[in-house]
Image 1 (tube, rainbow, N blue to C red):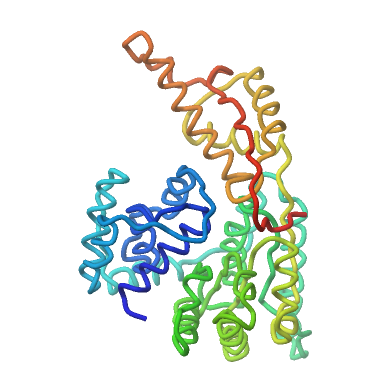
Image 2 (image 1 turned 90 degrees about the vertical axis):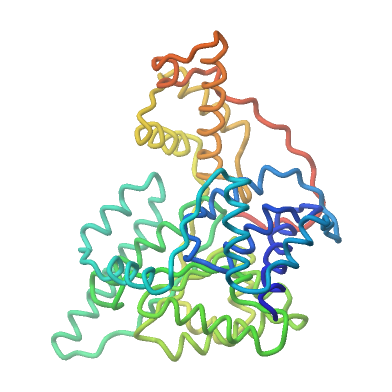
Length: 398
């Protein structure tokens, strides 16, 4: 697949994921950011996802492409072309200036960060500081205890009990799966199971190509980037969604072989909705035999989501009183935030919307004073948007 085609495929893939009827310049920027990875690290993928989520959904089997966007695709022939287009689009769409990082300097920077000392106590403290996730914290602690017991047995010349590093994380988006994967990588590193705390995050678009033979190369590239640490595969169930009809099977087979070849140098964590992940694991005998550790991330309660909101307030030096807190609980209970933008993602978006409403309210008299933008009011809480009935596949959530 050509460089141009890969970016086009990534842009189309995210447009389909959000049920957009047209590939826009924002989709192109997302595709380039995904393709070029850390060299464009100044472009925040979470921010791009948020912007994409604001585009109205229009479920359709065909994606429109304007002449302007087609011209952008046509202009992407080399790495330099893609980089320049991304810089211009970031300036235009996000208001951000992008500093391109060379692979050499980035590798040196990452290597230093990934190899810097971290204690198990520090990693556990970070995990335990997260709101909610009590069952997750308990399961992670038990997993680490087992590995520490094995370390002691090995030290005393006893055979270790086989316990794999690989994990299956199940649950809705926004429940902390990626964050916990990073902390688990730190714990593996701290007790000597892995030589670094590196976490390389990928999804289907980073593993599956459109031509025979290319998928295996993409998977191997992802494995090479993750070696010594953790390969985190988000929405992993999408790899088995086209079983027998696409290249997802090739990606799975290559990944299974890589897990076997790098047993002491790589941990693979796959994540996604509970039922689809069960089907994913059962789709390949090699997956079933290599994944022993299953951790489920439950949806946050309304009270826990408000606690996350309060943490955002503290980090941004904002205030709110008990009345606002109660009204937030009422809002969240009514909204029932789930799906791609549910749970903690919903709270982050809610915080930003409330700050926007606060700013507009403060500017109504033509002058914004400091005391008007440091404390939320119930009037800043937006109305719950009515949910339109959508036709199509929605992953089961449990």
